[in-house]
Length: 135
Image (cartoon, rainbow, N blue to C red; front, side, top):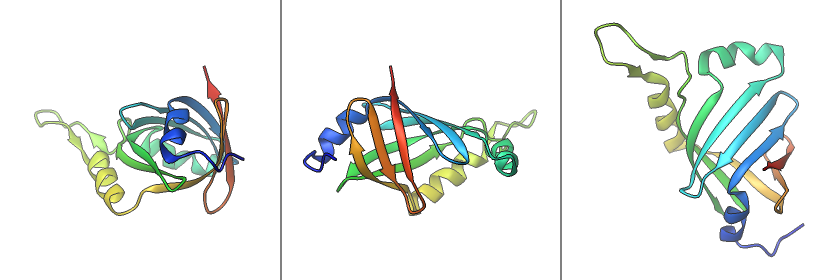
């Protein structure tokens, strides 16, 4: 456990690519130093696959750490079925609009349990999630 790390030190350790695995999905995240992230979620639970077909599996947004809590603010869902293109009209980014608006009111929050240069453990309401740094 590294309770003595500041929020800025945690953010610096986060820069780069991480792989997480939960009971329902495999997640790859890239935390960029401009405080944006790219996330890919692959559903491993067959009942969640229809959700993946609608939303897609790519997500982009902004992130920051405050009081050892990682905040993810979703902004775009580039591969969503709801980002439709109708011939003769400009592309409508309905999923991105919904994601941005919902992120204004609620971000994903994860308590930072432990972090070093190769391992990252976070906790949400339901479970602890362990991430491995990918080089």
